[in-house]
Length: 498
Ligand code: B12
Ligand code: SF4
Image (cartoon, rainbow, N blue to C red; front, side):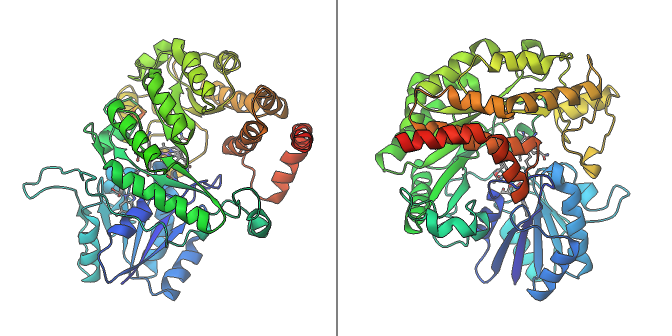
């Protein structure tokens, strides 16, 4: 049977990285089946396009995975595939929480023939076999023979054949520049950011987050060796094609077990498996100097930190009181001393936020080493404690917000400001962090560092700007380049002098 795994686009930006679930399920597919992958972010497809594709390619099963914000598109695609006569199985965090919606059991239309609840590592082979026999069940749940929930151990972990998978759709270097860039430095003909997981689960249970409910609070890790082998494979592939690879460790909290993380990083260094990497680590765990030394030595370049707010009352209200705003500056300095920088994520519209929250946050940010600040709105995702709390309090203004997804738009009313004020705060956060002046200032603050760091933060800022101000297509990029011409001119002239 030919199987298509499809991830919908988010309708706003081009995603910079493919989704791990597709590669994982591909690697876990029983022999005798062929699996094709389409990431809608890299290969946009509408309903007619997908219907044509499944017919022309004689696809026998389509698997669709989606986060809440892409679910409306996922359902439209699923409907088109089913209308073309091909069965659809859906999985991922949204349908796990809203299985009845996907199966049409809540009064709405049915979108999926089957739903895979939770982690599907162990149920996927069964789904494929059932589909091949034409006997798909409605629901596949990860349970043991006694009906108790069972989480995959991650030991052993399937080896994803990164050396042979076709990754053309995920190359971030434009095709026309490939030949020329292959010869620059160690080769830049291709550049891909690849998701790798080293463990699953997070016990912290922040109110707005799906992770503790979905993956459970029991944390599971792969063996160090299996992670190291994966990095070596990726590194070899990049070298063989005159390109670069960076890894995003998608673990929710990469250093949740400090001892294990340090041992993994030591093993990466010992095996010469260093690649440039990004990971998500909560600020409290970055107090450890030895950890930060190992992050830098093993190739860590950017750490994503969910700071959320500079107001302890806000943090306490979403069960994230372990974040201590008073130590944010020290954490970022500790990283910057080792040339590691941070993607600092903030949420506005929290219950203690008042108008002016963006400027108050920016004042703090301006005292920190330069990084990549990002701003979002508190969003009640299905089945989270936050959703239940707001629902019980009658504060949800769009209880099924995912049915008509609107980027950067609240689905409930904050307590101390209006929805419109919250939207204006987010806009102000982005506009003031990514204006040509702010970008120039961030680049300039690294003038004591080698030029590479300045170029790095410049390119990263231009790309991150696109999360809020979508810059799709060559014209948008040309405009952006023109707006930032002074910074570009300074960087280019420094490069010539050097
Ligand atoms: C990496 C990541 C990202 C990446 C992008 C995704 C990517 N390219 O990988 C980045 C950093 C860009 C990102 C951004 C966002 N993310 Co994110 N992200 C993650 C993260 C940390 C890891 C995803 C992952 O690969 N997990 C590991 C794989 C193995 O798990 P999985 O995807 O769930 O797949 C398993 C099962 O779900 C199932 N499955 C999944 N799909 C399918 C399909 C089929 C057919 C089947 C059978 C099974 C199946 O099988 C898999 C194996 O068990 C998750 C948290 C998490 N730990 O999962 C959050 C998470 C997915 N993100 C989340 C959110 C909210 C966002 C943002 C909206 C945040 C924001 N406010 O801006 C944005 C939106 C981005 C966009 N594209 O528009 C939420 C989604 C919750 C929800 N209900 O939708 C999560 C769960 C985190 C959270 N805090 O709750 N994210
Ligand atoms: S620390 Fe991060 S992953 Fe863990 S529950 Fe909180 S937001 Fe979710």
